[in-house]
Length: 319
Ligand SMILES: Cc1cc2nc3c(=O)[nH]c(=O)nc-3n(C[C@H](O)[C@H](O)[C@H](O)COP(=O)(O)O)c2cc1C
Image 1 (cartoon, rainbow, N blue to C red):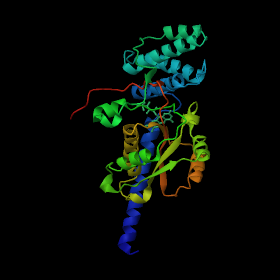
Image 2: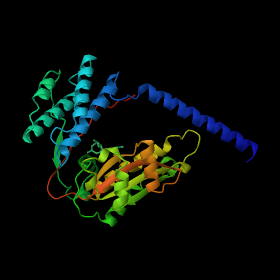
Image 3: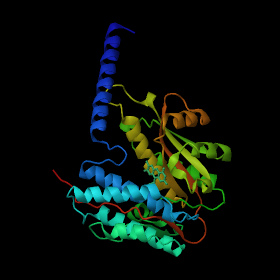
């Protein structure tokens, strides 16, 4: 390495450290801790996350009456605090949370569990249910390959019930191939795809991921998306692996839907110990970072329940 190269290397290292430090400071300042929110956007996200956990529980085949007590308590407190801050209780997410609680009460009732006290506490909250929370009933898509783009995008849902029938390997490979058309910074395509078929490895990975409880056992195979840091330049590209990798992962989900394969994205934001275990199970290269774990399987016959996961269609800001 000559002197000029050494100088550039040093400068880039400084840039990276600076970017990470700035991001770290911003993250610490704005991300919320354990549902303790101080501004409206934190409340919106935290309340949505909490009521979504209830939507998930309502969608499981193996319904557990009275499930999710801790999250329900946290949700009630958060809704109360949100209202106390003087924020708008006609907001869509707020009404969706109330309607999700309503759905929880009525499903429990149908299973013989009367939750009078909870009902009374919900009645004391300001605002009104708007019917936008809870579960929806869906079926395997009919001829998804004939759908137009908008129909395809809007009919994809996270699927958490699968048949025992193995997903066709060619269809899976075709979906992955289609996703290769994802754009990436300077076409570097730093992502990597693994398809995990071995049941023990699937179970081992799922045991290290928190978001598949209640349905993980129904997943047929996993697609693991990683991104290789060797595809990135040191100046300005600290987060590029996650940007390119995230775009690729989203396209995989849509391509799977196009092929009629059910899928559920599973967060790869793991604890350090979980990540160590997953890295070992997958023999990951040290240069790789985890982007997303995707559970795949065939749709079971008939209809299934999934989370409503209402979308925000807020006005687009033009400048
Ligand atoms: C990065 C990411 C991580 C996710 N992690 C989980 C998870 O761990 N468990 C789960 O059941 N769903 C998970 N989901 C699915 C979301 O809950 C779902 O995408 C969202 O509610 C929208 O619903 P839809 O996919 O049905 O449109 C995840 C989604 C994304 C994009």
